[in-house]
Length: 378
Ligand code: PLP
Image (cartoon, rainbow, N blue to C red; front, side, top):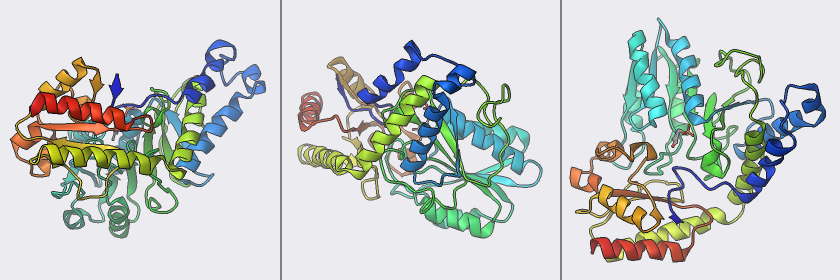
């Protein structure tokens, strides 16, 4: 398998798997037990939290709460947004959020909470002019993503959050940073300093699946999400998933090493090589979001005339894994909504494929993909 779908999920680092194993074989204790505490399980949890804080450059007082992943974290953030907006305010988001934001937000309308969505410009970034027209002092909760899962476009979150904070100082601001964490340096204390909550999923940065978290800025009060045995300072009850937390610990540390080292520029060289070869071979090809600042690993490209569904299945049949956009839309026959919002026409949008690379990918693999695309489409 040539795996080129790393925005859907990533292969766990071998060290992650190794770090998890003891907690499923010999040290399978409940972290709340006396012997679990004596065996150092609390230290593992603290170490994982601190690894996450380092990865997002956040302060040691900021709370990291482990959840089952970004979907749960997003739903939790929105539940808090609902509480704050109920009866006296409204909620803001963007038109291009992941369904784990979009769907729960739509459900808020059933509670008579008004939800307004910022559109994107043709380059795939939030339209800050429209944002400026929308935001007023009644805004109680905003959720804006950091990097888009399909286009890879990095959003002007600093500018958006600054504007929101000026107009509505007490608005709770959340960012779904799932696609950015581990792929770009981010700083909760610097460019994200107006953000109160961020969501992440470990499997997007070579950690295990089914674990992620919500980072809560020091001083931000939010209601517990899952009530029960009182774990995680009563904020999210449930027996801690120690194997996964041990995996997060290693994944976050290794991802930070990658970000500080030369992994990201080498992934970008591979992506840029791929796009320049495709542009040479298929002169009509399009690269969505390429005018904007993008994740180094992502190419959302289209070869007009091609049918993305057919191509994805033909490539899967020969062992090349990529997707036509969000993995959630793999079963959908609709073209990616984001592309239509960016004013691509239906033919262009129907041809779009997403290649998302990781450190393990090679020029040989990318050449094999190009070769197969030529056989299928030229
Ligand atoms: N948010 C974004 C931007 C994503 O890309 C994803 C996963 O594709 C999620 C949230 C949901 O993550 P998970 O499925 O791990 O809960």
